[in-house]
Image (cartoon, rainbow, N blue to C red; front, side, top):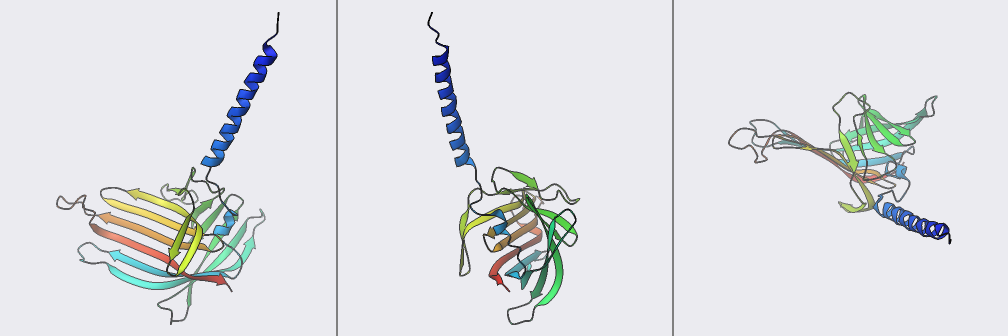
Length: 238
C-alpha cells in the first residue's frame, strides 16, 4: 500500500508557509511604524530650543466676543540628571515675551523623563504620558496614567504628513491626538504635531462648553472655555 503521508505533509507545509508569508506581508503593510528613531520627535540635547507664537482666546458666558491674547514662548533643554535606576530626566527652561522686540523672561522649568518605551512630561507637578514607543497608529494609551486626572485616551494618527507652518515646511510629521471628547454640549480636543529633529511644531488645545438652552443647543455656539494654539517660528541649538 502506497504511503501518501509524506506527500500530504509536504503539501500542507507548503500551504502553511504561503499563509505565513502572506500574514507577515499583511502585517508589514498594516503596521504603521516609525521611519526614524522615535526619540527624534522630541530632541533632548542640551541647548536645543524651540520658539512658538502663542494665541489664546478665552470665552466667558454673557460676553459677545472672546478675550484674545498673544505672546511668544521659548523652550530650551537646560540640563540633564539621572536617578539610581538609570532613568534620565531633562530639565526644560520656559521663557516668555509679549513680542519679538521684548526680552525673554524665564517663567518656569519642567521635566521630561526618558524611558526606553515612553516619554513622560511633568509640568507644574502634573506628569503626563506624552509619547509611547514604538510609534504605531493601532495603539492607544492613557495620557493621565501618571496622575490622578480622569482617563484620557491618546493615539497616533495613521501615517506621516508634510506640514507647512508659516514659511517653514516639515516632512514626516507625527500627529498625536491627546484628547478628543466632543458632544452636543462640549468640545475638549488637544492635537499636537512633532517634526523629526525638531520636536513639537504645533499644539492646538480646545476646551469649550457649548450652549445648552432650548434656543441654541446643538448650534455649536460657545458659552465658555478657551482655545489655545502654539505654532513654531524658530528652532535650533544654542
